[in-house]
Image (cartoon, rainbow, N blue to C red; front, side, top):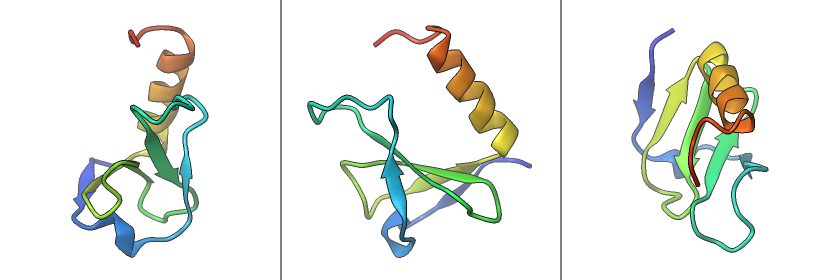
Length: 73
């Protein structure tokens, strides 16, 4: 499954903030569970902005890399 955008992510409901997003505001990522085409991801600071839908495997790889410290803060 390839990535594809959602132009207005606010059209979907049920977004949740990633547990890895900071509690101080700043860089916040939100994801949407149970979306049939994959895992939508958006910037919580721009809820009416775009979201990208990634494959479940791609999201799992990203989460594993984040937990493994492969990205700097």
